[in-house]
Structure formats: structure tokens, C-alpha cells
Amino acid sequence: MSQLIVIGYPDTAAAEKARDELLSLSRDCLTRLSEVVVATRDEYGRLRLSHVVDFWTLGTALGSIGGMLLGIIFLHPIFGVLAGAAAGTMRGVLTANGIDDDFTNAIADLLGCGQAVLLLRRDLVPNRR
Image (cartoon, rainbow, N blue to C red; front, top):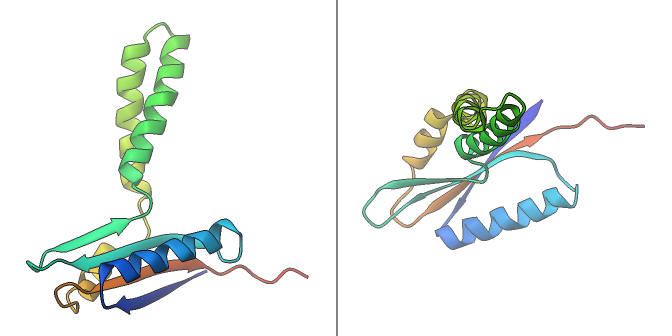
């Protein structure tokens, strides 16, 4: 089970500072975060989403490394890298199941120019006794 928390900030710097603090707490195992997104509106009204983990890039990188290793075994490393990168990218696209983009856009529509919002999904862990 997880919990979705949305916090508004007057500017991007404050939201990014809060995100960094939360990630620090997560690294220290004081909280368990599944995804953290900072949504901002610039002075022209354009929306910018800043994800901590880019699933496309991660999937492509891991897939190409795995494909290269398999390609070396079967004596076709270049084909292995290309096939692994394609498979990793598709896996990255399909596993990006964090905070819904439609919900993020609906929240971001409430922002004024220069404002930011921090969206985080926190995993709830049962107490162990």
C-alpha cells in the first residue's frame, strides 16, 4: 500500500530543497519513497516535471549492458547492444507506473507562474514486532 502526498511551494528552489531532504531521509531508511516529482510552472506558463528516476534512460542503459554481455557470449556484441537497448527501453516505458501523469497535470494546472508542487508517493510498511 502507498500514500500520495502533495505539497505546494512558492518557488522551485524551495520544492527542490525539500525533495533533496526527503531523498536524504530515504537513503537513511527513515522513510520509504517510491517516486518523487517536482512540478513547476515557468514565467511563460510552461509545465516542467522533474522526476528523480528516468525509467527510459535507466532501462536503455541496463538493457544495452545486458545485451552486450549476451552478445559477447554469442559472438555478436553490436547486435546484442542494439537488441538489449531496445528491450530495456520498452521495459522502462512499461514499468514507469509511478504517479499518474494525468493527476500530475491536473495538480500542476492549479499552479501560478513561478510556483512549484512536490508530489511524492510513499510506501507504507507494516510494523514488524
